[in-house]
Length: 272
Ligand code: OMP
Image 1 (cartoon, rainbow, N blue to C red):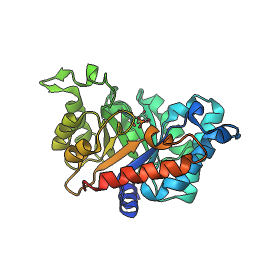
Image 2: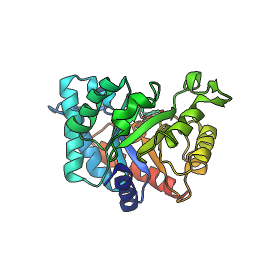
Image 3: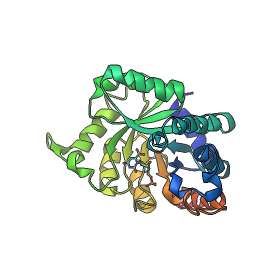
Image 4: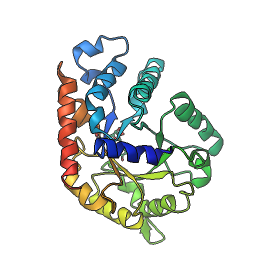
């Protein structure tokens, strides 16, 4: 089964387009979790055990784990293994935003798909298709390319006009076309840019988009659903991290995260 089939099955089973971002931060963890040997893993485990029925994917962002050094990387691996063992049907997306020359990308491929063995990864397109071949050739994995990112300054390069169109449109056309030989590519489009999302959906009607920016960054579910859904009322992986993970920082954090995830999943489904 390839990534998109696994994702589709998970969407069917959970009736959800929601992805919970597993982005733990030490200063935001409940006190009793901070004292554990593997605090990020224990935190993630509790979040996963209360939200697994409500999500179509989990997305740990490597930055938070790298910040702890080897112990953090180990906890990232433990998290990915936990999902694979207990909730095998739910795909794991490593948010790592990698991308280097081809020979170096081989190292990233090993880390992401051999050591961590996740289902998909986020990548920069800046070095071009040739450089990303070690990823693009992996027919079973999800190759998720940054197109229009959610941050306030994303227009600095991404909205630059190239041959009469914004760079993000050029990225969307290439990735949905000639980069997508094995039908394993997805695009990242921030929830904070609904009119760009509309344009990108128009030229990539069948692609799945990873949509960050809901919750803490201010993106609106209604905008995303109006402009991003595909003809089958799916085609979106809608991520939220902080608004779910830190719904409460007390002992009830996991139940609060579940309630928040359910609220968001149901809000999304009202537009489907
Ligand atoms: P929250 O703002 O807490 O929901 O987290 C958003 C998550 O999505 C973080 O892990 C970001 O690094 C990631 N992200 C963005 O916020 N904006 C983007 O344009 C792309 C991503 C991403 O690739 O997931």
